[in-house]
Length: 187
Image (tube, rainbow, N blue to C red; front, side, top):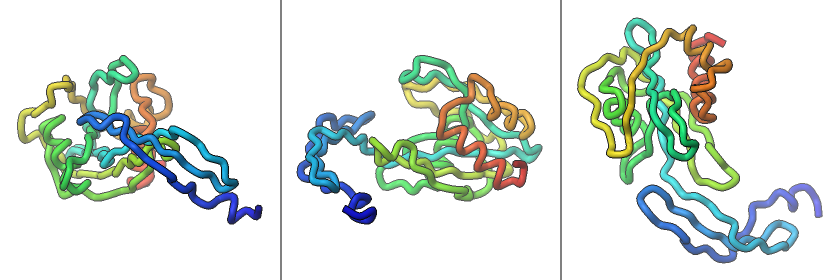
């Protein structure tokens, strides 16, 4: 079998949803690999994706959120982010999530990059947006599962967070941080 044949996509022989709930949609695939091997119950988490927002104030401070994340059972520091709703564009989600989580709003969002968050077991992507001239304009409008403290930091302080702060360690957010600093010419 040559390299092209070995790298072909898997064939989905059958699929069924084991979980189909508002916070989790989990599909079990029966797949055939390139060499003919059949794998039962290869699980894939389906999602519409999410956005991560790098919001810069007129003073060039970055807006961050501190909140509890149940999956890891810790309070962590992140960029504002959220799941794209059905029928919503990623750009609209970025604007909405920034306002809901922080009360900030600013210039129209600029897409910096879209990345796969877990391509082995998920359809999820993170679209990273920059919103400049962000200013506090409204009160937070949080979901029932959210308690969020808003913080602002200088870009230098943010770069230090990326280099090792134990509270800022969510992989998609770290990637978004480096993508932002690269976009701003600070790497």
